[in-house]
Image (cartoon, rainbow, N blue to C red; front, side):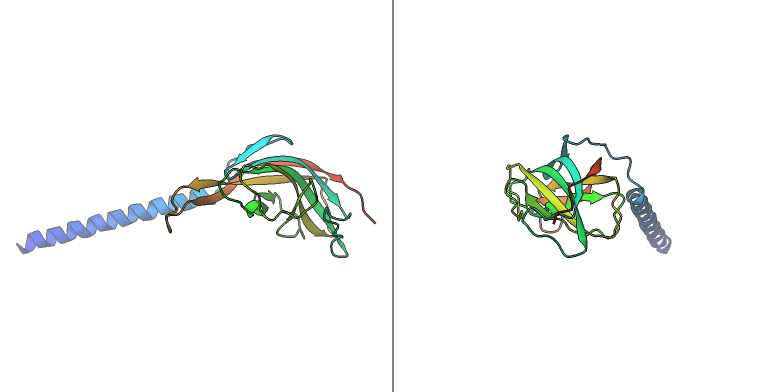
Length: 195
């Protein structure tokens, strides 16, 4: 009787130990896989549509300038700007202002402001939120110290998200798991110095 109880206890502890080791091994393997550099991103060309989950993105051109922004703001003294013109369509069912996170510079440009300001090209107004299903041509502008070096060309990574009808925490729908979906290299055209 005591031997059978000891045997069950030992078998139970052994099963728990093996299960724990398997779970630890799987988690470690998944962590290592996610930490590895991503496989090469698909390369896009200027004017080519990029499906990025919530967004459909068409990058047109990039430029650098010390001229006033589309809304007339000249920027702080001693700054210049890098801008990217793109067509953007919100494919979700709600208005969104999360478009500032879809573009990133690869490699990063030293001194660049962390978040861009987005302008509607049609009238120069600052874009607060993009309505669903309504494509807009916008200009995203990042400030840069005037003394900072500007490369001749930039590589831009486009970040996409995945829609989940029910998230794990609140069981609410949303866009999750941001990850780069494409990259594009553009020459930086000079847009003049302004006065």
